[in-house]
Image 1 (cartoon, helix red, strand yellow):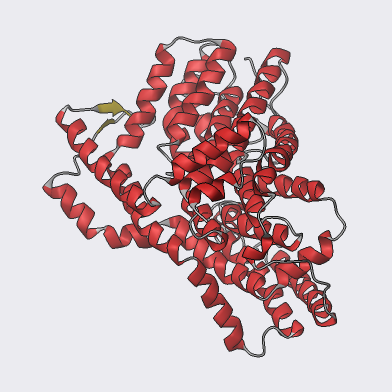
Image 2 (cartoon, helix red, strand yellow):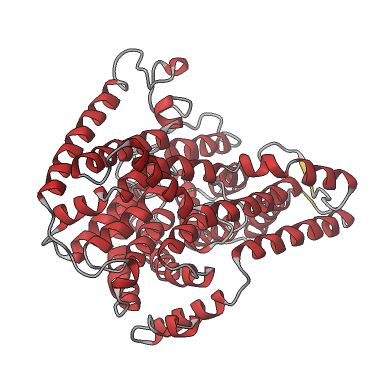
Length: 516
């Protein structure tokens, strides 16, 4: 079947579906992602040379230092590129997270535990309710840090396949919900604390006495979580699922839903018991005056970024998948010995081989971009342009949302972006009688909604790698075409919510207001 035929098979109905199919066809005609990152790396090196010739620079609003474009097409630039290629690759954070998680998820998936468990738990539950639960969990995914980008897409794919639904739909729904709804949670997360730290520092540039709390956006984000859950579910069921409705699941090794055997039932029972014991042990390591998982420098806090619980969260998640997966494998008869279990882990790593290769070239590009200072200067210039437009009120807040969206395409780290933008936006809006809380929420909306669309986003290669497990020739066009409906709809409802909040002058959270 040709690429065009595969896309046509997913056209669905209506004008919007036709647009998505066109985007998919065009996007898949782009070079291989590896080639694209090589091209982008070369382009960055060339642009750094041109900008350095013209003395392009910007003053960092946080530090006051002048940032100039570093010429990578120089002797020093060449030495840096050549000597740090290996460390760029080995230090590429998303790859480490993914590979550690695969140790646990590989066993849970290959042993059949995830498939059997979802089949047992979700049997008879309406598919739309499963999607609703999935989107809710994924929108809240940043509570678990970046682990959600690695854990939820393959888990959703396995869940959908066990229900007799296309795994690609589950995978795309999970990734889009985690990425585009990144800041919307029903509980406070580490991202709230990190964002508030920069907001408070920026506010004190004008008001030395400014003090609030990391919860200044909490009310708004709780409502956002509920709204995005409903919207994400509708997008998945109405716009994404029909595109894959006519694909035969036999191509994914799934023909019909089988009845669980007594051995599988027994395996699930013992696996869940093992999971419960593991959870209890982890909880015990998190309690007490000086918990094993706590940060001694912060009075034993387990929520401190340096605490083993937070810094080692992906290890915790891997263990929570590995233990029940292994127990299920041995009890159900899938594994006769440890060699068979580790052979499955090896197979799981084999599935990720294309992703690992992609990471090498992605790591080079992202590091070149960082070394050149192009990302920082683009962010500063974008903020200055928005300030020069002299917007006020709601148009200004919407402008901050879209400025954050655009800058998000060039700088992956949320904290790095806000460190640059907060000293510009927060004082600017303070002078216009707008509270730092509303400035922060406008930025956080913009920082979330374009995440799944950008090939430069750290975890874009992750979803591409997962998709290759089911469709070997999946291209960036396929990913982007299935992400656009989520990003577009999330943008619309989030902007409407922001406008309504401002017009009604509702509190954004404890201590977080719209107007001063």
